[in-house]
Amino acid sequence: MTTRVAFTAADIKRAMGVMEKCGHQVAAVDFPKEGGFRLVLGDRMDVAAAKASGRNEWDDVLPQ
Image 1: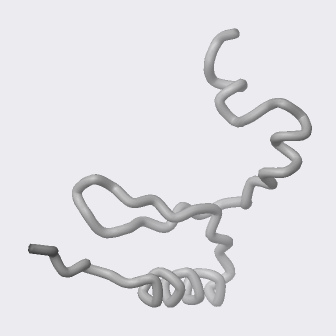
Image 2 (image 1 turned 90 degrees about the vertical axis):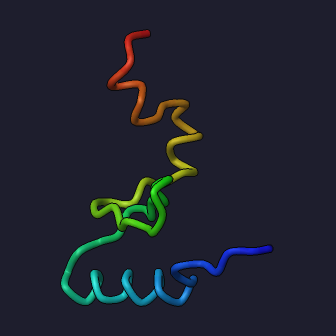
C-alpha cells in the first residue's frame, strides 16, 4: 500500500514563487525526515563554479 504525499511539486513551485515575489531568493529546498519541505533562503550556489574551483562550503568549516 502506498501513502499519499503531503505536498506536490506544484506546492513547492508555488511556495518558491511567493518567496521570490517577496524579494527573497530561494537557494535550496530541504526535505526533513519528519515530512514536508522547507525553503532555504539565500544566494544560490553556482555548482559549476564550485566544481571548477575544487572547493565547497564545507572546506571553510571542516579542518583539512
